[in-house]
Structure formats: C-alpha cells, structure tokens
View (cartoon, rainbow, N blue to C red):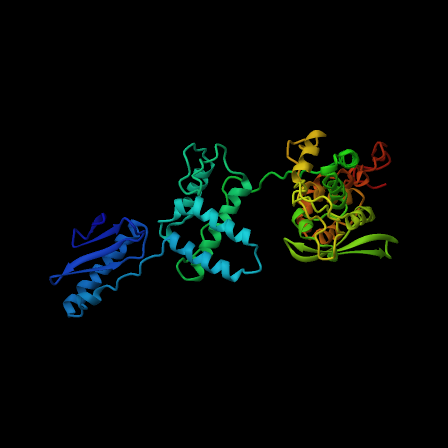
Length: 441
C-alpha cells in the first residue's frame, strides 16, 4: 500500500492527504457510514486545507438534504497522469514521422540518444507536471558535476566523462527536453511550459570561430602545394585532392558536408558580368536544403583540376592503395560523380600538425570547417557586404555579426571612432564696464 501524508481538517471531521506519486492534495471525510473524497487540484497545503473546509461544509449540507450521491459516483477516479517517459515515447513517434525529409536522420537519432542516456534516467518516472524549473535546475547541476562511475544507460557501458559537458551539449539536451514538454502541452497533459532558461548567466561569452589569417592561409596552401609535388606515388592523388580542397573551400565558403554532397553536375563555370570575372555557380545541398553559391575567381582553377583529375582505380574511399590491379585505366569524373569522392581528414590534420596550424591563438582546434570561416573573414576584410555574404553562405547576418564581424579589424572605421569635438575659443568672457546696476547703458 502506498504511503500517504494526512492533515486533519475542522478538528478531524475531514482530512487532506497526498500520495507519494501525486503532486495534488485530496480531501476525504466519512458521512452516513460511507467514505467520500475529492481532489483539491492544489499543490500547496494551505490552499488544500481551505478547499477541504469548504468541501466538507458543502458535503454536510448535501447529507442533511439527502442529496449525497452514491459512493461510486461520489468521486470519479482521476485520470492517471502521464509520466515523462510516456510523453517522451509519444514525442519520438510523432517527431520521426512529422519531420520526415525535413530533419536529417542523425538529428532525429540525436534526440533519441539524449533521451535514453541523460533525460529519461533523471525525469523518466516523474509525472509530467512535476518537471518544473527547479527540477530542470537540479538536472543542470547533476550534469555539470563530474562523475567517475559508469553510465548504465550507454550502450557500451562507458563511464561518465570526467569533465563537465560542453555548453552546446547541455543546450541540445534542454532543446530535446523542451520539445517533449511542448508535445505534452499539445496533447493537454501539461498546462504550461516551465522556464527552461539557464539562471545566473543570461548571455554566454562570444568567442570567434577558429580560422586562418591571411598569413596562415598562405602558409597552409603553400604547404599543401609542396606536399602534392613531393608525395609518394601511392598517396599523390590524395595529396593533390587535399591541395585543391583547401583552395576550393576557402574560395567558396561551403560547409564540409555540403562539399561532400557536391556533384560535378551541381557546379557550373560562368562569366560574371558584374565583376567581369570567371567564377563558379554552385547549387548547394546541405544543412539548409538547396541553395546557391557564387565563388571567387580563385576557385575556378582548382575546380578545373578536380574536374580533369581521374581517380586511380586501385584506391579506396580513403585514398589508400588497395594493391588491386594497377593496370586499370583511370576514368575521368562523370557529371553524377562527387567533386570530392574521398575523405582526406587524416592527411589534412597531419599537415596542420606538421605546420603547427592545428590550434589557433585561443587553443581552438582548426578543422575543415575553419576554411569556411576563413572565407567569411577574408570577404569581410575585403569590404564585402555582410548581407550578401550571409546569403552566399546560407546563414544569417546575426550569426556573422556574432562570430565573425566583431573580430575583423578592418570593419572598424577610425574616422568614425576617433572623432574630436572642435575646441572652443579661449577668449575670456568679460562684463561690459559701461553698464549701470540695472543693466542699462
């Protein structure tokens, strides 16, 4: 039998109680040889006691008038409140179906992983109404506290990380939590959304994205060019691909996943009448769906090399020698072939480490994404319009201003900053001597 917490009302004529699994208080009394009870719909004890007094007086009046309902109709059993686990299951069923084709399978899977590993172990058995702002704060404290024991909810039973999760990681978990609570509101299982904003720290520190300065970028493509010339035959094709990858990415601003999805039929070499230059017109498919990108003129030559460079038939997807038949004639890329058919992350990272370019001034690791950041920063440095850059990179002006524009020195106009007021004349102001006391001449 589950435990109850009882409080007498009107000297014991009635009482209020609450079960362990419920947040609401119930009122109960014994009249005419039968038990009656009703939910107060109150979470605070003081309000529940007030409700119970009025309810008991009303029940006494009904008993005197013979209007008490039969015991089976005295109280309709309250519907069982949904737990967070049940709401989360319903959310995943709906989310995976409704967002079909609009969210990547990895993003949907990410919600499922965050629920299974972190959210359900903490909130799973709670009634959905018990997920309050205070409970969410307890969850944040738990996640930010380092733990050494193993995580029983991870598939490989790996231990918890010794360091607190990154800000973005915890943010994504709260996003998943918010989506579950909104699903409960749509079904009428929750009356309102609790405050999920992090307390004490309303605005996080803005830090710039790791990028290559003009000098570092020149050092990078010089290193990749020299390595492409001197690489051993079995990795020469990969070295040449990496060199053109660096030049292509830094002159188009594509995201790495967009570049991996890019096919030759998506790229067109065109003559731009506005700039009187030959550029690339690219149909991009990636994070933001389908969009268009216009490259700089410096991206044309690397792309022509990519277009005319056949992939050796004895190399696998990583660009490594498989020791297969070397006498097969290489085939030139076809329109439906990918511009970058292989992943060269290891070779790219080794070059960065060898040239000491892997980490920037703030010890942030540079990746292939840093080439996109380099493109944006270099375009802003050259004075490009920030709105046009945002459209060309399929992002927002707000994101560029937050992560890039604040760190580009050429965007600061010294003539507008170092403004000085004209100095006033130092002539002394004297009172005329030929006036009388009333100021008359």
